[in-house]
Amino acid sequence: MSLDAHTPMPGRGFADRILRRGPLEAIATTIIAAGVVMLMQPFSLTLYSWSFATTLFGTVLFTIVSKVRE
Amino acid sequence: MNDLSAPSRITYGAVLVRPAVVRRIRGLSDKALAWLFITPTMVLLLAINIFPLIWTIYLSFTNYRANRPNAPVKWLGIDWYQTILTDPDIWAAMQVTAHFVFWTVVIETVLGFGLAFLIDKKFRGHGVWTTIILLPMMLSPAVVGNFWTFLYQPQIGLFNYVVAFLTGHPASSFQMLGDVTLSPWAIVIVDAWMWTPYVMLICLAGLRSIPDYIYEAAEVDRASKWRQFWSITLPMALPFIMLAVLFRGIENFKMFDMVNLLTGGGPGSTTEVASITLKRAAFESWRTGYSSAFAIILFVTVFGLANIYVKALNRVKSR
Image (cartoon, rainbow over all chains, first blue to last red; front, side):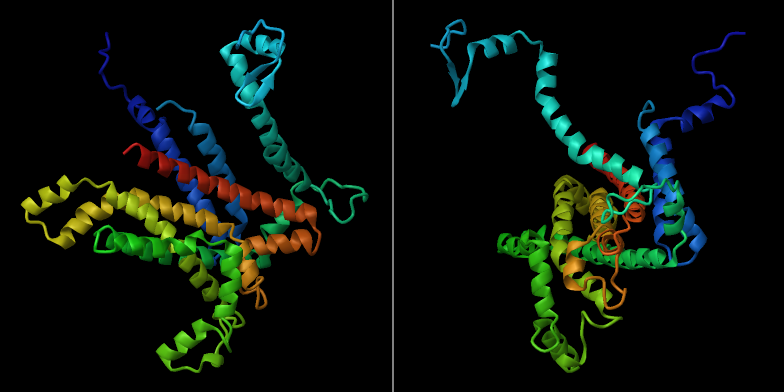
């Protein structure tokens, strides 16, 4: 069985779509924004407590994914 | 007579260079020359940016106090981070910061975009008006803080008289900087007054980048001015507005000078933004380890926001 270059492979298309710089940067940006909102929101002390970890995770993720191919 | 082999000194511009030095530099590759020029800057950056950052990260894990430099330093791990991230007082300071950031950014964006929209119409004398509008932005925050303290004086302040004239309340019946309810708004007003022109400039750049032929095509399609605004002007200026929002958000998140001059964090702690709390912990309570941990938390937040800012900037540049 031969595969054409354009033959869609199950599961791979989704990974190809997601594991690119654009979508990964968007995910990291969303996590950073969520962390900042958690830091400054007036509703829950628990959310405030986890804000730094969230922002740090988002920032590290952004730094890593900005090196991923376009 | 710029013969490099000549034994005498050679003049390049106003600088005297020894021939031996010139010969040595001429023998270097382009890459080596590039390193030669970059190294002093890199050393300076490492010394004044990277080293203090690493040192602050180290101090944030210790009980070090700058007023007791000879006391033994104890390793505390992430204790300070846990203390700060479960402290209701710090959480309150974050909410004061959030109030300040949110309202300044909203007011500055709405007014800045409105002013840019008006200035973009190129009415008669728009150049003079642009210069007048830009004046507050050119002042030093220290000067602005001082003269707004006078403007807010209940007895002699111009601001109170204008409010009294417009509302009928006696001028001395309220204190903008001494009232628990009014003081957070007092610093919002000053920041909006000073930085709205900056947002206006960025929005104006966005509006000027929209090609005229798009509006001409819309006119041909008989689109109303309202429809043109919502379908052309706003979407095309949106990346620039986002840029202004992010920049002002980051700047106001770490605002210190103006708030310190206007209220010093008071009355009580109603205007105590995060940077004022940090300054009090570092230089009034001398809790250096604790304040280092707090500084790192603020740094990571600003760094994260700066990443989003750079991403938005790249999107604007790619247009």
